[in-house]
Image (cartoon, rainbow, N blue to C red; front, side):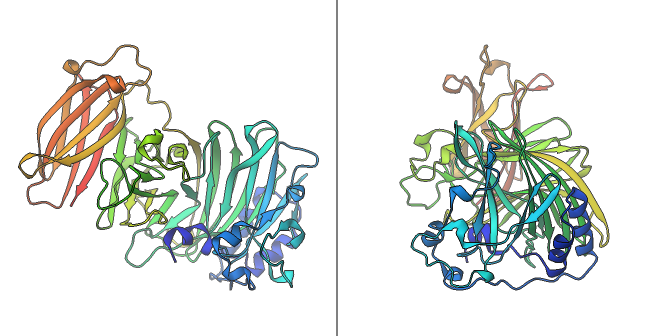
Length: 498
């Protein structure tokens, strides 16, 4: 099975019997119901339920699964109209294990029973025995792009994965509730949402509560979603550790990067770029803005950026020109960027970036998350709040030049040449190269013939330099542009590898 398929839905495990019983016994709903369920799950040994999806749904092709459509007249929260709608996703294809879903109206939760009447099955034969079928997740709809025309703005399906879009965007990268052991040799653990409670939407928002579970932890999540331009999710999460967790990933993101103009590799492809995201942006506790271009490495690469009190990080799709992709199907130029903004002090830890070798765009091979310094002990709990912003780029750079492109190619004498453009978007007075001081470092290796020049094409600056890696297979580089003691641009950080 491909990694992207697995992330999309194969790990979505159904609600355990004891949790289902609690749901049935407590129709009056509040966030405390989910907290109590999560706490109870963590106090008991993990029990993985057995997936049950009858044929032909268990072996549907992608095309046949896509033909199963939720009937518009069966959508939830449209009568009376709320401005929102909810559709429930059918199990089948890679979505083989059910998730329980309840609708909350007036503080009362009603668990939704599966019915084939919800769906138009297209060429797929309707189920002969619907009692074995459940739901795989849900999608939320809003009139985001055109008035009075509902369209999906978020999808929750598979493990603890969910996606969203801003106005005029197409679906791309995913967020998820929790990551455990990502990139470790012993294998990654995929916690999953057992159940969702969807509150009747308000004028501009929809609130969803989700119960997470897995071998090492359970959790209670509250998502307050505000679709628009941009779309934002406020996330309140409480995590209960069932076991000691050494490698915990909070606010994790997953994306795809195959190649771009700086690193086409051996891909024989008519397109100039294939990626859902092209950089990791960070705003650290020292008020420095960093930009790390993504890379599809030959070997697994893990980068950790130490910080205390991070102000934000995210996987960004910065290249917005269609001619840099030439792909009418995937619309890479319209895919969302996703920015994580901690609310409150997250303390000491690392922004972790994992780049996984990949030869095909169906793989999600980029992962980023916050890893606290301290491991989590069994029996403990942690709470955190953060905001997800699905939009076009990072928040306001407060007058800094933005890194708009990175290029690389062969240089003289066996060196590697790099070109980095710094765009002055919205700046009235162009920055003069003569007023800029360059601080450039390579470890190991050395940087030669660095030149900063004015680049009127981006109303900013261009940096060109040659890297001599010596005998090293991996080199860490860092570049700052300064005017006196003040940084005038995002800091460029990059890991070159053979």
